[in-house]
Image (cartoon, rainbow, N blue to C red):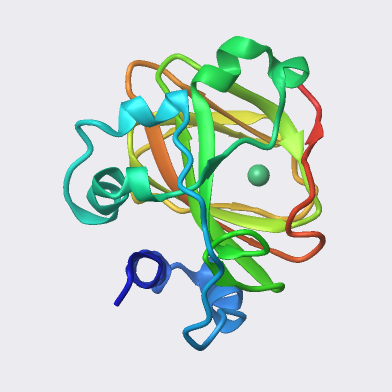
Amino acid sequence: MDLAGRLAAGIRAAVERVPEAAAFLADWPVGGVRRAQVPVALPVCRWLAGMAGGLAGMVAAHAGALEWRQTYGGADFGPAFLERYGWTEVVGLRGPIPSERVAAGFLLLGPDVTYPAHAHEAEEVYLPLSGLAWWQKGEAWRQVAPLTPIHHPGWVPHAMRTEAEPLLALYLWRGGDLAAKSVILG
Ligand SMILES: [Fe+2]
């Protein structure tokens, strides 16, 4: 199995017992079609070093083969944010496994960074894989340990904040425009 296939299988396995993920898995693409990717590294990728074991370890080991992207520009949250933020898509409109119904990939945040409140039409599930971070859904902030699922229905405001540890989390998106930029609230 190629890297995209192994990452997609790892994502599926990680969320197969998460009730909120069932609808995403029902829409999962079938078949071995692949979209060509151009590997792109970002400054945030430096914080993958030291992540070992499981799906986080697989992402860290193969980060150099992945196309890391940013939805935001310097005018959104400032240039410091862009040094500590990035994501890579495995399934969706842009990643190596095409799908128009569901998107899945990995979000990476460096330490001591706030991803301010934002919202989007798509329904979303996050599963943190590495790093103890703070997550806000609506008004309430809570500290979330790895492998604790987080569900955001469409248009629910949410935010994240890291402290000493970088955060790697898998994400699932479905509904609405899968490539839409979030509405910034914070
Ligand atoms: Fe989100």
